[in-house]
Image 1 (cartoon, rainbow, N blue to C red):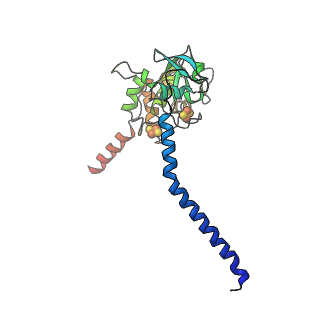
Image 2: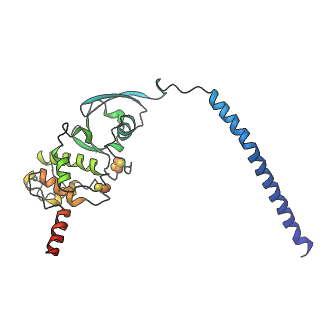
Image 3: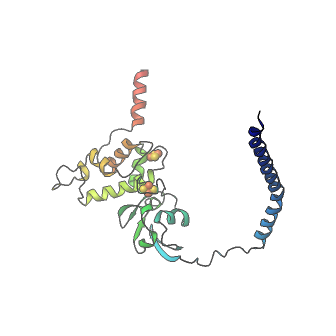
Length: 244
Ligand code: FES
Ligand code: FES
């Protein structure tokens, strides 16, 4: 090989050896550096969590009939206060972008996405989460209907679906219409609201397990209608018929 072609190789080998030695030197020095960091950390005083942090404001939120006072930054969402500060983890975080409905709660009786609301703006309002629906051991009728009609599988979307269903039933009772209401001058009543209307009115709540049939049946049951039997019961019945 001509000498002029060997030069770059020799030069790159020198560079490689240089880099390797530098890395080895760093590795040898690393424990010492770490020791220095640890020593510095142990001499630092722990932060005082009881004192307010700059930029935080005191907010009192009324949730499920109980007042909760928290110090929060103005940019914190209601969802994060519920879950991270008050440990009301029934309300779920799905997309955190107002697209899935997992975080649905009721504010002043209206369903809202709590991931899109600033907590600081909810002071003085009545907030209801899924934890506030039952009366002691007695489930809310919508909660009981979800169980009876197989309205869930993994259950992650279920608190949001239940809160949305409670609001839906109230909306129908007060004569609210939807984009699929056939005659806007005659809003549907609970007794005759169609499955199509229920699906449309719950379209802001997604279920990745696709438990939609059971969810609609649960709403129909609470509305006083006779829902179709749960899918699981249909399958069991069909299997029994095949065996006989
Ligand atoms: S978490 Fe709020 S809409 Fe998805
Ligand atoms: S039950 Fe699993 S996402 Fe709805």
